Length: 434
Image 1 (tube, rainbow, N blue to C red):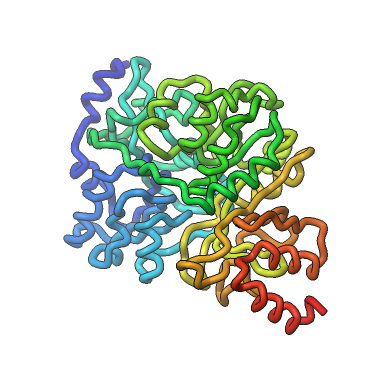
Image 2 (spheres, rainbow, N blue to C red):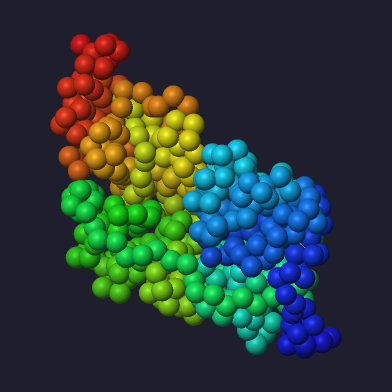
């Protein structure tokens, strides 16, 4: 058998050559964020634009690059199917240039294995190790299922990709072609926390005891929660997304993962995205476990952690507690992701709590995010039956176990003051408040 380096050299080619091997009508899969092989995708897009290949479909997840499949001049030949919209997919889908595949993030591996056609898996990875393996680096996600399902595997090697040995592995013998494309890793710029987010972060932090296990989302409010938790002790992390705020908690000693019943001493996540500081932290760090999403987001596994605390966001919430977190009316913003799993898991955890947090208004205080009914066409992400706590800068509305009228009163109390009278009038008109 040829040694690994010889195999690598024989399979090394260009992104353009890999693209030329893609046949019309094939289904291509990538994974999310940094795992997307942008040089290969652009090369495929170039061929599609020249009508050299037609009828292609590509599955995308939370894109951070400008994907060619959502461009109008290419979309007819190279169609994007988004599992969770990022900026590129959002623009394309809302313009009719792509499709959406609804589902819980935890179900994506099963959907890959059981329901969807897949011919090619392409991924950006770091350099091959001395044993002939590549790791998926910043993602666990659904990559393992894609590796199993795909007939062909093509890799784009980026020397800047962190190496995470717990992430899904691909051996050089499994690979049909590799190209090299060392580019800077995309990341999130550091943002100054606004006063509303700081206040919300403090409100939530006061609810979190020492020894709790955390799931935090992305954005100013989760970052503010992380900042407010710096003085806590013995916290744990079991989360969908690993972020910079979590690195801060680990480095200051607030998180040590010692109280977790499983993976004690380890941080568990299914993908990572943030700054170079985060990528440096996870690189060759055995304390970070990058595991498949169907494992990480399993509701019972989440619930097995006592005092599990879940913090997520929403676009609007109605009097029932129905939470829209992925669309404004029919305008697609994102996807379901793992919000429902973490809401349910936290509520089922002994001592656990779920928080849906957001600023009380949008567009310079002209729109209330607490509404009598969701905008027509809005997608309900978290149902009224699952919801626990809603948080704005004006306080916490505790909805679980409360009647409709009790929920409505609690929500109006944390709405922006300029909208409270209007919301009260609407509630009375709906015979919710007498």
